[in-house]
Image (cartoon, rainbow, N blue to C red; front, side):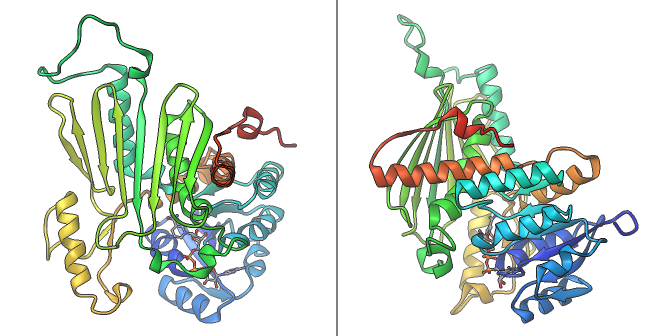
Amino acid sequence: MRENRLVGAQIGCGAFAREQHLPNMASMGDVCLKYCCDPVAEQAASAAREYGAERPVADFREAVADPEVDFLTIATPHDQHLPIIQSAAAHGKHVFCEKPMAMTMPEAFEVIRLVKHSGIKFCVDLNRRMAPSMKALRERVHRQQASPRHQPWRYVETDREELPEETHTHLLIRIQDESSSYRMIHLDPAHGGGQILGESVHWLDLACWFFAPARPVEVTAWGGVRMNHGINLKFDNGDSATLDFSSCGTFDFPKELYEVTSRAALFRNLFFVENRYYGIPGLEKEVFPLQHDDLRSAIPGEGFDAFLAKSQARARQAGENLRNVPQRLVVDKGHRNMMRGFFEAIRVNGRTPCDEYCGMQATLLALLAIQSIKTRSTLPVLMEEWRPAIV
Ligand SMILES: NC(=O)c1ccc[n+]([C@@H]2O[C@H](COP(=O)([O-])OP(=O)(O)OC[C@H]3O[C@@H](n4cnc5c(N)ncnc54)[C@H](O)[C@@H]3O)[C@@H](O)[C@H]2O)c1
């Protein structure tokens, strides 16, 4: 601690650290970034320069050994997460870790053991559950389930009773991604693990959060284990989620679309900037501010159409590489809220918004999905795997 500010170290100063971790910490007055650690000296030095960290270092162990440091934020390749968590736990440093928390179940159990025995706070950045638009979507679904409302023109057959499956809720997640952007490290089985472990953990976690306290009991997956795939999760109350992930799409259109059907209503989340509701009297839409919008004055407006117009205008300026465009346009997928929740948990000694058990569960479901694809079969999520007893 320094003057009541939590003192931290950024471990891994690559693309994602610069996209979210570093600017988010810089925007929080109660946090002080002391170290930027990266084995690539220029990465550590430039991140430290840009975000005001005193000490750029190559070896994260220097930061971990510093008694002033309270927490680490980890944004390294997947296979580097565990050794850093081991070292942090040994020195009592709290950890904010990028997804996936672990690539195998033994690794996940090791993280749980380390957190339990060290008493540190641990948070995995499975961020979608912290997006304001997702929270609003879930809240609207819950309200409809608790007290269903319908349009006056709804046709209802009166000579039969409601059947049990008519009370179930379904979440459809459609991802269209552009595979040309994937680096070898994402695809290498030992380092990245492919898109199910590397990316789909986001939506497996989101579905679990969405339907909690129901728990998933069955996984059926199809397609390939590296890129294009689909996953269906069944929950113990009859609810279900289906993910359709295609890597053959385009960055010219937003990557994510969510649709929930429940109690004769449709709830759509349009890339975190707009929710649309159908079938409920008086409820049409809600819009959500972007996390970062450099085109606010050039193209005013909010919601999905305005976002699309901004994103197309930005792409037109790109010339040969979208990454070179200086204007930032970032929708609010919950990253900042997740980090905020982590710091709050440290301060009040509370629970983090996505703890080591959530991280383990996302890894478990991803591994079951991979196994389901390989064996062309539906697999159970056993209670003892979902809530393992770990000494
Ligand atoms: N939550 C999300 O939405 C989201 C989005 C993108 C990436 N990520 C995650 O962020 C992490 C990093 O991804 P990225 O795209 O920034 O990768 P990147 O390759 O751009 O950056 C990783 C950085 O870590 C550094 N590094 C490697 N080993 C290290 C070590 N032992 N100590 C310190 N630094 C080390 C590398 O030199 C590199 O600069 C991954 O876990 C990825 O899954 C999360």
